Image (cartoon, rainbow, N blue to C red):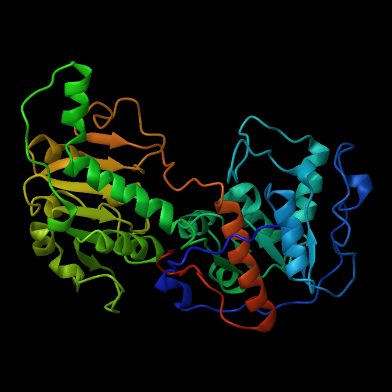
Length: 401
């Protein structure tokens, strides 16, 4: 099968504080994982999956990963037993639809079989049903679980929502898919900045009215300064993209480590000054306690008039009431939002009808290549896990990012 390499833009967090949990010997599968406990329509897991007491680490795929990729994990890492059963998953509605069809319901027998399957894992590919509550349940039901690969780049927020105790957080490492979504989100960031620079709302308004209008000057990327808040995998991909088009790139993160294609690193305490110098700000920050509402009235009052704002990180980073105020008074000339503080965005939000706002329903990262890229990342981390090396993208259990 065709291999899809990982995005080249890997986040620096991938090596931060990483740990490789001890790989335990595989244990007996819990009662109920056999055929008798399954729903009648559930098929056997594919040939080659673990037998009880095999003494091999047991990897359970907890979401509807396409069959060729399930087979690829098993082929590439033959030292482990890989278990999956498509009859037990919520079916995907499209590429990378990890949560699956929300209207799908398992029968009681299927639910018991699914929980028995995920509770037999030493390693889980995905939170069960991409649900923090189900992660907490399986961590407590399965003392042998050591590592969970989350599907989201922001898997830290899911881990925080699971409410695990400190000893559970110490026992079970959770890694994210950070870096996988860098390229598509960088493209959306570019699209958002260009939409503002080329006055897309004015163009669409004139076209809607069939009015030719007078000519006006548009901004050029090569003359613009772009401030990127957050220099993980997505931020690094954005820096590469804007730098390649001639923009001056400023960047800010918790680390002062130099980042390729960033012309100037900005300490967090100097953000107001940097914002006053920027033509556009691109937000790629995770949702944590320290970033909640970071881009609010206090910071936005420093924005140069007409600044463009693009958010491809987490919606909670932006105080939306303050953003609307800044849009109304012209401090922000245009905003492109792939994420919002509450999703779906409430129907009564003024952002929907603001003429200088573009709303994307958290869809900018969706790509048919995502599944293969996450599988490739998982295979690399699975090798690291087996060899006792550091895992990539381990969630920080203090800040949960």
